[in-house]
Image (cartoon, rainbow, N blue to C red; front, side, top):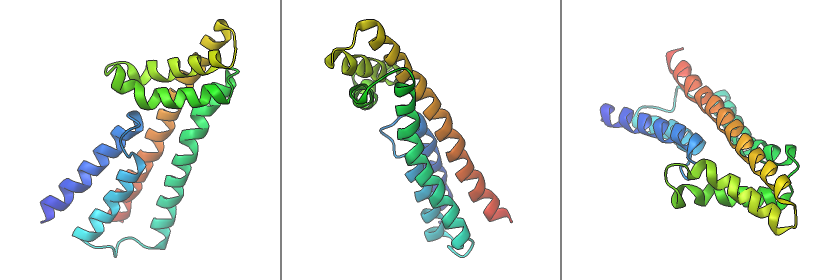
Length: 160
């Protein structure tokens, strides 16, 4: 049972880290779920109020940062609410439409279309599309760093 428990914990960590890049995967929630799997297979006694508080704050920060940083990229390049919505739609559907590059092209095209729909000229729309890609990459970096912090904190909590 120990092997199964650790295999599930590691699998959830891998899924969580993949979710930092591929938005359809649960990301931080998979990592958070790994802590519960560990508790069910082994023990919750290692984790106290402080552990759960820190991890929960990181998860909340991840959700806020995910949207805020992506929106920041669009807004920083002069985008409107329509381009933020278009970029989000492109982020969700892009990987399905163009499997290899859809994760990058989807938000770009979505933001550009969002701006064109509200009457923005093509040059500014393309600039906003670039901003959506900058926001996406920045968001991925923030998610990777915070999710790695969750995993490292978990390991350190078990060791000490």
